[in-house]
Image (tube, rainbow, N blue to C red; front, side, top):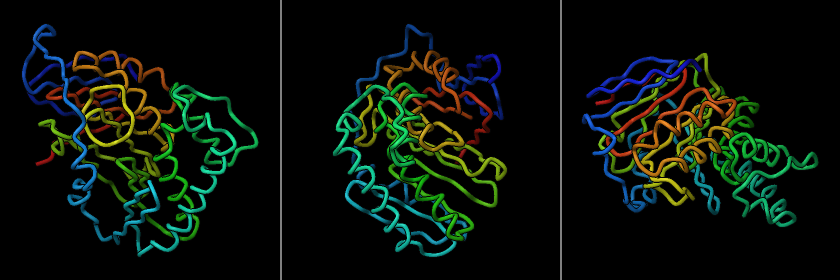
Length: 284
């Protein structure tokens, strides 16, 4: 990532490998009000953001097993295969947690366990990279491990969304819309993902939407990475950094210290900051 470049404007979107700060209203730091909004879980419970997805010729299906809720797009209906894989990985997670309860509860990184199943190792590694507990990577890890297994079974294209965390493999360019709760920017900003960058993980953490644990106040922190577990853990870490819009700058500086990140987009109220080799687009 190159040296940050600060841009303040009414509405500016650009392909960049630098740093963008976007504000719909010009504000001095002293005039930015602190956000004290509580989480608004209704749209998350109803998964209303799923209704705006363009399947682009792929078949949509949903698989739910306990807390796991996957929305899948594939070349054909893969509910049966997906459910079997979800049970497999949930069983590995539940058995490991039974023997290592700190894996479930720790908010800090844990040591890598060379004897753990691959999905557990991936979560432990992601937690250490982002300096958070391993469960911060659980949704992204399930999405990626299920998605990669489906690809090995002959599925040519797959999109798996797990509570806002996405494993993406298409044979064409995609645009991912950012859902940011009550922010005026929600679903008006998209990230263009070139086909050459896939498969890719695109994960979002929020302090105002959903039930996942966040110590921050961001409406959305979206992270792109070749590793979906890393993207998930990093989104959690960076979301924890945002207590108000003034923290966007410092959170993006933290993002530069997390290895494996391709790009980051942070939305807090009317403010947006971005960093990395990403292309943002305005959505109608």
